[in-house]
Length: 276
Image 1: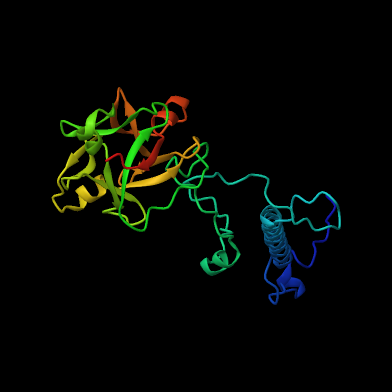
Image 2 (image 1 turned 30 degrees about the vertical axis):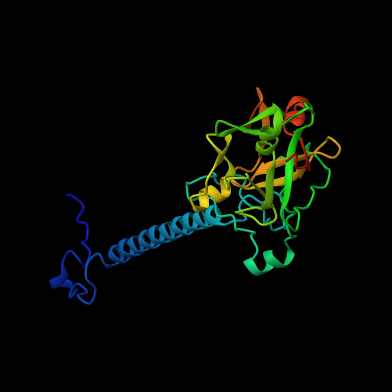
């Protein structure tokens, strides 16, 4: 006969009086284990995310730090960027102006030296002899050329030529009343016996009656200047500074100053006593 094995009490709960333990749900240990593993996984993921974010923040802070390029450990570098902002109108050049305030400039700036006169009479290379002063009273003069000592200013056909003296009429037309300048009292004007004045018009010296205008007064006023020829005078136009009376082709005219020896001789005259 087959061996009759006894069954456990669990197989025969009712016969043996065994009942299952209903105080614990089946699989409780497995559920706790699964829950623990899930919590560990969540904690590990959260930790990894936090660490990665902190590393990223550290990298960005290091990149933004002005001391990131320091090469010597423990030393703080205050070096400025090596790139220079472009100059011009780009708006990137922010250099501060070093101009002082107007009051400081006026206090420290030396007074400029006076500029030399543009007139040849006051410029470099011009005659240095002191100009003669105009006479205090009316004086009759004849005007003789330095390089043609036998020729004088002579009114001929309304203009002034450089002629030799011939007869009493020629003497009278070669004698002029020297008066204070019509436009400048420190200069000269020259009048004839019949009341006309010598004035330049069209750069030629002419004898004309005054019309009372300021232009006529200026055209008839000549300022004496020193000459390189001893005892001679150069006559500069008051309204054309740098232009002097000179004879050219034996006609007295107004021309711009130059340094040539011919010009200096042609524009130098001796004011002598009147011939008439």
